[in-house]
Amino acid sequence: MISEVKRRSPSKGDLFADLDPAVLARQYEQGGASCLSVLTDRTWFGGSGDDLRAARAATTLPTLRKDFTVDLRDVVDARLMGADCVLLIVAALDVHELSDFHQLAVELGLDALVEVHDESELDRALTVDAALIGVNQRDLITFEVDQERAVRMAPQMPTGVVRVAESGVRGRSDAVILHEAGYHALLVGETLVRSGDPTVEIRRLRGGS
Image (cartoon, rainbow, N blue to C red; front, side):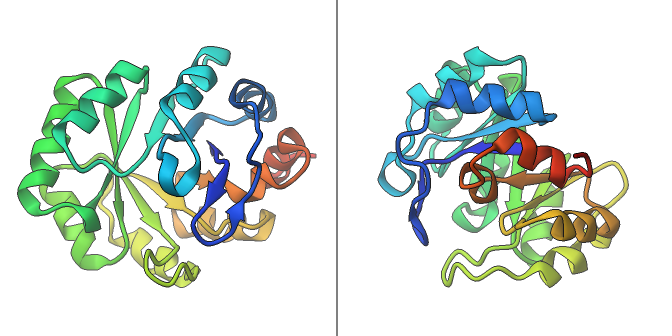
């Protein structure tokens, strides 16, 4: 479970605008999360580098910087913020940028979650030997969730790739479907921050009580 510190979203507006990232991170850890994802984009998600630093300092969990990585300096900034992983969205990068950003992340000791939406983007992710690939179930234009996309694409990833299903996980039934499809991890934000008790919600998603 990759649990997200997320104040707002472009499609839903404010989700938990006044959240305390340190408190939320500790609740996620108590629920059994394996990793944190922290939105640092201010314009669309209301996040910041301070959110990441606070969440990272509050737990022992590795942390993904969730942002639009569009410059080599963004990769460096992720390392300086204390992140353990950086997001690379294939749809936002050309072939050379994806390769350069991925290579720099590795050189800096960062993992890279390479996000794809379809088979052609998956092919591009595999050309840079991405070891951590996320399938975003939400369309970046319409914001609609298509779980069938994730289910369809999971078996197309080679053995050895860590498969992550992103967005649109609304409850235990979604988690079961994605696990059975072959995903190793789920990245969940909105469902957790709006749950009222994220510790309990993570346990539900993971099959506990």
